[in-house]
Structure formats: C-alpha cells, structure tokens
Image 1 (tube, helix red, strand yellow):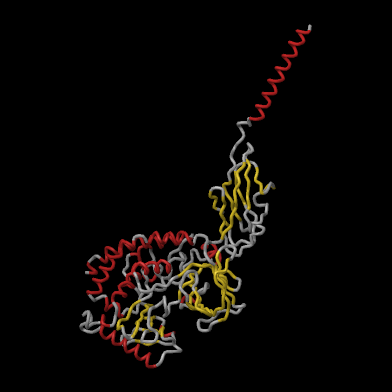
Image 2 (cartoon, rainbow, N blue to C red):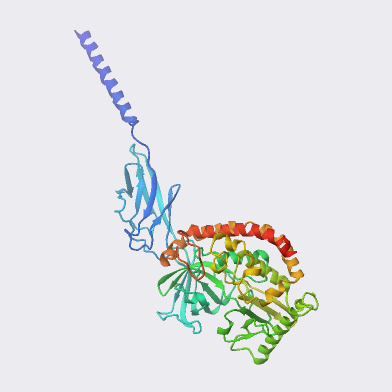
Length: 516
C-alpha cells in the first residue's frame, strides 16, 4: 500500500513539474503573431490646429529625430502635432498622446515613444530649429517709411538661431530705395548704421541695402549674377546674405542684406580725394539730383561725389571727361588701342561686365550700367559692379514670352537702350576678340552654375515657405515677367534650365562668325 501511494505521488509531482515548465516556457516566449512594428511615419503641425503658425509644417524624420523648421519668434509652448505611426500606443513621459489633440511644449526637446504590439518601444526626439537664416529686426517705433529721400530713425538687431542669439544691435537710419521696385508691395530699403559695422561676415561699413526680390519668385537671380561676377573676377562684387526681415514687429519676408554700392574700402576702389568718381549710365537719370546727357544723348547720373558735396568744377570735369571718351568712341580711329576710346575706357573690365550680363540675359544691362574712375593718376573708366537682375534669366516678356525666346537671344543686340555706346563698341574687332578669349578661358566654370542654383535653392527651402505665405505671388506676372509657376521649385527649375541651355548656346555663338 505504501509503495502504491508512493508511486502515485511521484506521478502527481512529475505532472505538476511538466505543467509548471510548460507554463513558464509559454510565459517567456511571446506570441509570435504579435507585431514588432513601432515606426513614426509622419509628423506634421497643421496651421488649423496651431494659430501660432503661419503655415503647415512637415517634420523631417531622420533616424530617431524629427526635425521641424519654423520662423524665428514662433510660440512653441502649446503646439498640437498630427502624427501617423505603426504600433499600438504613443506616449510622452508615460502619458498617452492623441494625434491632432495632445499639446506639448516644443520650446524644449520632446520625446515620443512608439510601442509595438509585442511590447517593444522606439523613441523619437522632436527638435525645432529656425529657417537656417539669420533674422534682422528693425524698429522705427511705428513711424512709416514712405520716402526714398528722407531717412527715418530706428534701431536694428541681427540674430541667429531659434533662441535669437544677438549678433549685432545698434541705431540706424532707414529709407526706401529702388526705382520700379519701390512701387511694389514688398519694399526694398537702404539703411545707414550709426557706426561702421561688419554684418554677417561682410566687411564693416555704415551703408547697406535690403533687397526684396519681389519680382523674382525664385529669389535667386541677383545672387546667381553676383556669383557669376565673382567667377569672372570683376574688381568688386557686392556681398550679400539672405535674411528674414521683421519691421516694427511684422514679418516682411526673405530679403538679401547686401552691400550698398558706394566708394570705400572693400567696395568700389577709388581715391575719393584725388579725382576718383562713380557714375551710372542710367535710364532713370532725369529723376536724379545730379545728372547730365552726353552729346550722343547718353543719360549719366553722378553717384560720387555726393550731390551735397560735389563742386561745379568736379561736375564739369566729369562731364568733359565723358564727352572726350564719347568723342573718341565715335572717331575715325575708335578701334585704335592707343588713339581710340581705349585710352579712356578699360575694355577688360567691360568685357567681364558684359559676359556676366550676357550669360544672365539681363535686358537692362545698358539701361543701368555702373562705371568708375579710380583717380586722377589713372585715365581709365572701369565698368562695374553688376547690379539688378530682376529682369534677367528670361524674366522680361518684351524680348519674348516663351521658354526659348530669351534663352537664345543675344543681349549684345537685343537688350534695351540706351544703346548708343554699345552699338559702336560691338563694331570693334578688339572687343569681339577679347570676348571670345575671355569666354573660352572661363566657360568651364560656367558649367557648374546650375549646381549653384540648386545649392542656394536648398538654402532657402524653409524660408521661401514663409516668404510666399506673406507674399502670395506664385502664378502672378510681376513687372515684365511672363512665366507662371505653381510652386517654388517651378521657378527654381526655370532659372536652372535657362542657364543650362544658355551656356551651351553662348558657346556656339561666341565661337561662331558673329564674333569673328
């Protein structure tokens, strides 16, 4: 009996042990049918849910980080994201989150944890930053800027980063600038600082310009032209940096903070005290305080000496010097290097200036052309710097309103007037020879200009969103423009494709019979 009971007890213990092991094994191995997916696939902030935002913002999910770019000054304290994910649950610090419902303070890093069906977890960090551009804040204490002649006193602050690290702060004077651009809704400005100061890595000076680029939906035309100027080695090319401009607390858009074209160290290299001067062949000359017309009817504006400082003797000297240059240009021996117009005119600088404008298809290249004489010791008139390319890159319907029209038109013959000088210069065999030689020396560098367009467009990829929310001009024909795009990329592609075709075509023309 005892043996039988002992045998029965052993079997009970064996069965219990087997059941225990089976249960433990079953507990340790999760159901193979439960999903292990725990991925965040979309993270968006909808303006409809977030009144603090100007636009919808799509997050860029890279690895375990969600990058969000917004305009500096945005209130991040109570934002509501919309998100899409795999898995069963999303939490922040253990609190379950609902898309389009749950608020968070994104002024600090926020960690979202996605939980899979099988219990695995994946954590993402949401990080806000600015548009990758510095910001310029100008205050005139509410006083309007409605004149190109009268300055308004104010203060300026330049910052970088979402935290607003101050790079410069000081007093300024500000007024309007530009000709046709001053009449546009997005205004360009000239600013004068109280002291000479270097801004955003550019050399110190008091005088700066804020270029609006309202008529250029790519925002790139002047930038690309300046890059071409640097590649062709013009003596001075204005430096510029893209910024976000705020005026009296209002966001005004994406601007170019640019060196104002003037005499000075690191700008136009003239001897201010010994016969140096700066002029502009200027279709708007008759609206300027100091101008004259040459005997051939070329309108010339005196840019330096300033209107308040120039003496009658200086004015007469400049006018007479240009008359002598023009007389030699239209003389019988005009193409003679020593006896013709080149005794007054530096043809090398003009060829570089011409090529920059020709590549860009700038229809205004002769309507507005800046020139300078360095000193009384140097008899030459130099051409430059380049400026104002809003109508370039096939943006002027007066020379055609199809994609191909301006891409294959030579500005040497088709740019707007006044054309008296260029129509004579283009007859000079020396000019044509110099253009061909210079082109063939630099054309290799021109092939990468379309890549530069893409690089700069990428720099503006966040800023342009806010600029065109502020100025809804996609699809609009502004000034003389004709191309109608639907997106920012449409306008970028238009400029890039223009250059690709233009450079190839110019190579054929400049090495063809027209420049023989």
